[in-house]
Image (cartoon, rainbow, N blue to C red; front, side, top):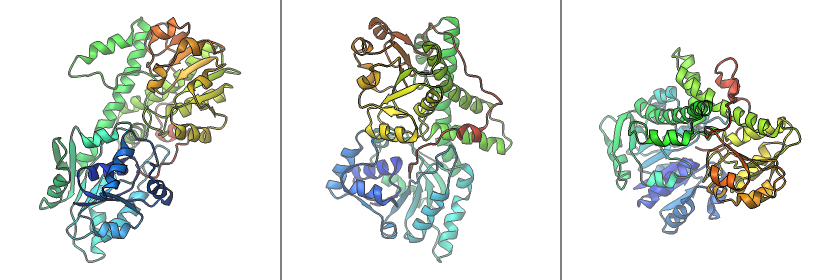
Length: 466
């Protein structure tokens, strides 16, 4: 089948390579000449495990091509996926890119083609999507085409595996009166061994939104639980392990720490709260989820200051910059806001992340932040090690050797990722979240939740597509 994917960001490029691996003839389209040049050189514009091999192998057998010739790519397609970004880079929705994409895509589609939206859209946009496509077709005297949502549930760092082996595939019907679009999309996903759920478009949009809101809630719950454990002398690891055997709960996303980041969870929690408030629908649970998440970053800084007896003049090794392991994505990464707070407090920061791109962009985004080429370089002469991203590399560090090179032997584990006994046995003071020994100094949040003012406190790197 001939498939075109508009937008070659995290979602679009993984979708393109995955569909090509399933035997489809895929053309990826992007407006960014620099992105297309990177792909033409055989490299990738971002890091995602396994994606380079998938792109290379499918391009080699002539099933995957990239171009900026949008109209030609659309005219030859049986199915067109849109995967442009809808995050405004500062915690809000932006749909201008989607408007542009539809204007460039819809007029060129064959009358028997199907339009499939992978981009995550705000509810009000979903509500108007069918009418927008119909208007664009009607202006040209062309018949309406099937339009479906196909929300993605891929995780950065596991995006290839999530696409090739999905838990479920969701179709949201915007316009498909005779089922032609659904049938064609089922054929596209014919090699995927997963249940296919077909539902109205708004239900599909909320299926994606609901999944992310629940995951964010679990993370904030784990942080609240860690505080209760600390206050009462319990160890959160043992508590969560016991909870995880309950099939109603499970253990995933129940690790306390500095909280969630990335392009999806923070943005979708904050915008849901803001949209609900504008619609007069109370959402106190989700407002608290956001509040707890932001407070964890403040708590991390406060705890570090208490351990060091103040921040001025202290040298801190910040371990991890990307918002999670196996990616170089800095969108709403906790590391950036933590680094700014530490720098504002008078500390000197030397940061390390295994991803060179993450190091370079973090330094450009954070005035005063210096970066190191290795964990050993960052830790040499440091008063404290502050772990923010749980890269496996940090769990394998020789803490006895590296601790001997530090000025003060303090480790603050912001992800509960290290072995407390191992670090302590190496002669360092170890502090984490909910693992005992430290009272909780919860950062005070004043005035309740304000999505706009809260999100406006730090710039977020711009990524062209989702």
